[in-house]
Length: 173
Image (cartoon, rainbow, N blue to C red; front, side):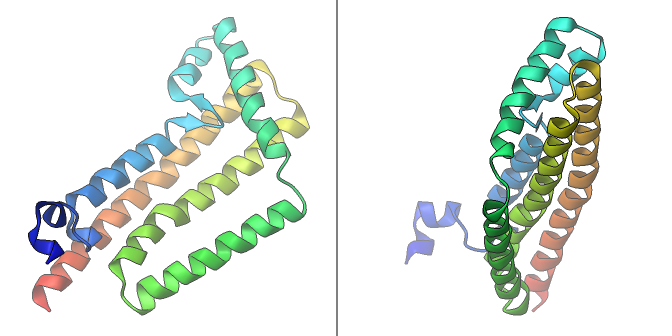
């Protein structure tokens, strides 16, 4: 009944055959690689040219982000990792063992995000421990941006190929 309505045709429940899944996936990963520890990539590019005002802006933005990370330690960190691991285990089991495409799609969104967030957490700790400022801070953030881009491109390609495989399997089954 719902599938015959206009809203039902726009919102398909099989995410891999829906264009909105791919649009959301692209938007999501574009945003993930745009801001690194609170600093956008355009500001990082300006800092590469040695602009002192931009270097100060990077320090302020990254210190704000890193100070929020500083509060997550000890038992809070253990709880956060435990809850994330449990949810990812449930999603992966339901998605790949029981063949739920929606759970697979959610896994493709959040599993790499959790890895990038953990990497950002490690980088933020490094910035806080070494008290990086100026050009050294900009260098660390540019490295983090490069790692994020190198990590996200194969994830995007894999998600799209996995979606195409699921579509083809659906047509031939």
